[in-house]
Image (cartoon, rainbow, N blue to C red; front, side, top):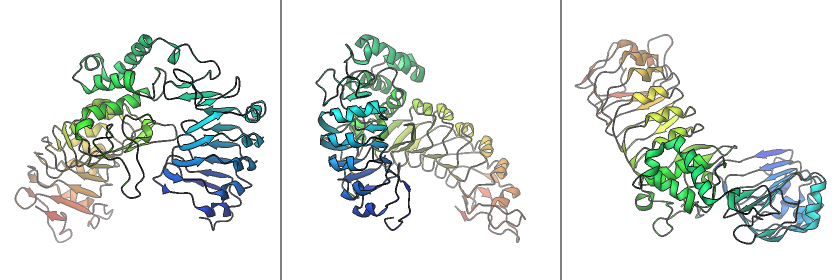
Length: 469
């Protein structure tokens, strides 16, 4: 990348990048925007960054960068946005940042910084600086950073999260009594789980509610937009017995490891202070809405929580190779953005009817479970379906003739079930090398066609089924 001398904008955010920023990044003399937030980058910032004379946006938030914030950052006078939040910077906030007269936003909260915001930086508030967020929250402990009146626009602390009045500490966290906070949070959780499970001490919902209200160091307020999302993931953790069964990144530091084996850097445990978007196996979009849950091969046991269907931005679920039980919850139909559902190699049961209510699905892998229904006709209405794998279950009935409508299908695996009968001739038209003039996309078609299902055979289409069991 350093050879791209004319590169002006570099967006590498929301990937899985690790390692350090290369020293030769300073060769990008035309670079105006560098955005690498939401990765697992680490180390100190290279000195060459401070020589980029055209740099306007520097966003490295939500990584693992360390060291101090260099006074040389004040030499990059073209900067308008600096986002260093959620890293591991320590030391003080250099007063040299007061030289950045074009600066509009400065986010340095949730680090290990201390000291005070200098008068030179505060003076920028009368110019262009409209956002200044630091760890200057007060209750119940003294702030990490002292910020004078009318300087910082939002303060953070482990106890309160944020407050819009950083210079005058509220009398109570969230500006309400603890009883009022608990009551308002419970009212919102009822909309997701209903009241009975929230009152039953034996449920995951009760445990998640208790954690949110009493034990979560982030101290969520009732109006926090992340409340329901954070609660849902806590519910999944307790429902799958995270404390006892998880193999990686459980809440307990004494029972499971939590680091990237490839690079040796630590990951973020479930139920930790950080945003749930940073927790192991989870990914969020720019608006901090959860999009991916990837907790495969992690020892999860128990049923699929119904609350997960409330995550409307969820696009991918991978809970494969665990010990999940029970049916696919009907509430999953609310996850309108879901296109990939991987639940293979578990012990799940029930029918497949819910799948037809999720029209955006492209990949479904339910193989090696104990589903026992028929192949629902409604699956043929999932027009974009590309991969459908339900092999090694207890499915019965026949292969619906309506499957011929799945013209985007590339993989269809239904072997090792109790499906019988004849296969409709038209289904063979889905095969990639079909004699049908339109052809098809189906590359793999595997089923029990030795003694249970009759697979059509003719000289124009001799290999309708790619493999028989």
